[in-house]
Image (cartoon, one colour):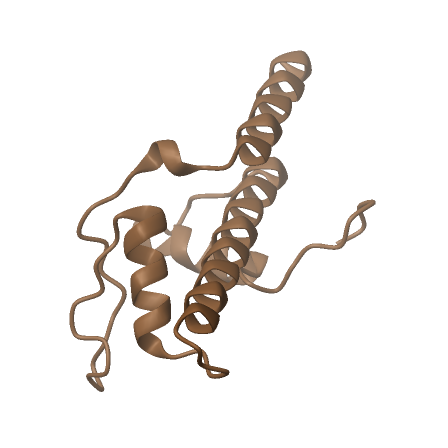
Length: 120
């Protein structure tokens, strides 16, 4: 990443391209789309980790446990994670609450849309 702010490793570009090619092997991702997806991933992980740590502290624990993460996901995003603790556990989003995106994310998305509109 050669921007003013370094991109995170939560969702590397290579992984985004891999996910896109699973849907359509010929699909290419715009740099702006990659950045928005990385921002969403960053915000998501940061929010869930921060809230889960608060929940652990509230329990009087100094250990972040799976149940803290599960409760954080449930409270912040209405997400249920069936089968956590199974060896075959996979993230399955049962319910989503898209309006829960942060204002900062919405502002970045609007900036991207404006820059795309100018570029065309």
